Image (cartoon, rainbow, N blue to C red; front, side, top):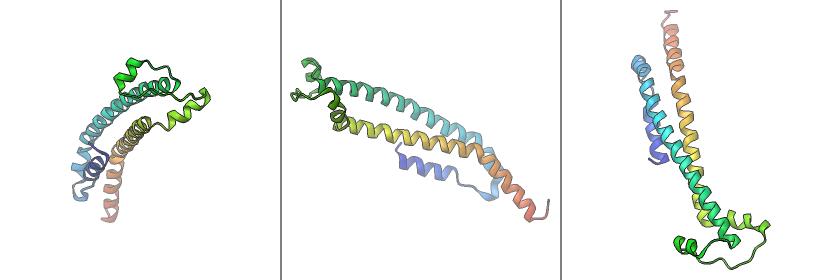
Length: 145
């Protein structure tokens, strides 16, 4: 599921039906479970992506250092890097590598998605307090308090 689909789903799930506060209160555990599952899956995917990034980073480091074997080059379908660069300049090449930039952008997007899901879970956990406050406000307006 992409980020915009997730946002649309959250918008639908977290909208209040003010005339059905009791039902909304009963939906809290269901919503919590749903978004906790999403968060768990995204965290696992994020960790896997970070490991893959680390592996690619190591391969690029070997590539720019000239330490990558011909077999590895052939397997990855990369050309031999013939330019001799200073060790201190290797991070410049690695940071500007298109493959790593694309991969890092996936990691950053997934980190944002995880952060978003964590904030949604906090909102769901606080939902009971909002419902309680809405009920108290209605009682106050109707003179029941």
